[in-house]
Image (tube, rainbow, N blue to C red):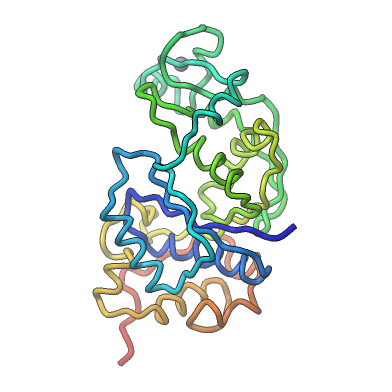
Length: 284
Ligand SMILES: [Zn+2]
């Protein structure tokens, strides 16, 4: 079966080094397999999605040389009604508020599963089983999907969530491999149940190393310094960015196409990588 990978930026925040790392790995993985790479903007949450960010992301992707074979429709142009209907025997309405759920200790415990509410958020009833799956970098994984709580597929205001959209889109787009950051390694168990509920064969999974600040903060929680547009404005070049990111993967070169033939999903450090507060000075 031909390999189909995808870059799926979320249009609620500017691309940062962590996105570049995940997208670079996706690009290398698909290219080294002779596959097709798709681009899809994830803007299902229209309240948070901002068109000017999508524009900026296109500039960043182009600047970084993250070329794709085809752009697929963004989430705002897709109809998820049939996907929700297909899961109707596995969904239920939940009226719990965020603060009620927080009081029970984090993950949703299924309070409304048998309540028969006529309205509220639409949740997917997970099966209580341990999923075993293989990650191309981290190896065999075991995770209990229910530890994450039944995911919301559609909010009470009717907005479809990322939980549903990402799986529906990947199935619709024929995606065979998913490459992303290690923060979603465990959550994969939930997504596998959704893929299977749709009667689809889950893709292969590759979770890249997590990049974070020295103080443990996620890059997505920081502003400015690690954003691609800021690095560009500071005078860094794509070669400089790739030299750094590829070195963390023990790969040679300062451009993605130079690393294709040496790419291995297990290359480089497994654990989180600390991003220096200031990238090395620009060589002149
Ligand atoms: Zn509930």
